[in-house]
Length: 263
Figure 1 (cartoon, rainbow, N blue to C red):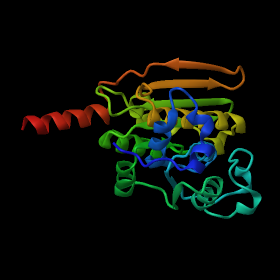
Figure 2 (cartoon, helix red, strand yellow):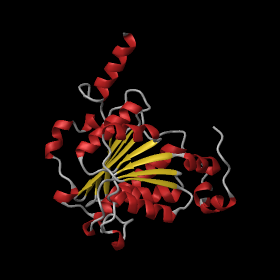
Figure 3 (cartoon, rainbow, N blue to C red):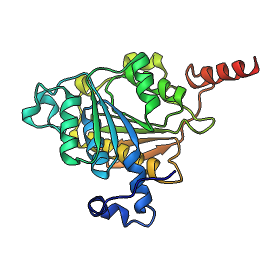
């Protein structure tokens, strides 16, 4: 694929990345044409969005149906007090555009679901799940698996954070539902009901951005993994994700494709 050359101004702006031996001008050109969907413009989405915009990701789609509230400001650091009452997707789009006028941000001021979610996922090179409810997480997972779009999912509550990477372009890749079956959703808490420490959200959002940049620019893609952050001890745990043979998402859909092929 031929990429448009970088302007002198862009080369200077991104020079600290470009000088890396495994980055160079080609990686920066890849970012300029990349399309990333960020679902959720809260603590995770604002931090990840800032770093993706700063790095030069050319097309960002920002989806959220909430408005900015004063209780968001301690952890959703892209917003300002003057943004309170403004739709989050609109406010974040304005902040990212102000950070980098070279990129294009498209706010989606509604909760994505059904066909609209499937369409947005299919148009993206990569999806960041920064949502705050498991119904949306399960729907994003299913849409990404169906379209084979890589998914980077983040979560934070209390002093703990989670980062999950699913490269659905690879064969035999487990999915979010393998880890968290829908039947377990009823017992799951969120930061609104249980609280959260702001920097934990920031750490996970930054790691989502870091993995996204690796995926978009590097020949060796990040493998499917589950990471857990203990904010009290500043420690990380990494685990391989087993594929659930009874998963109603990745296993059922795979069997349906096989059966259709055989028919």
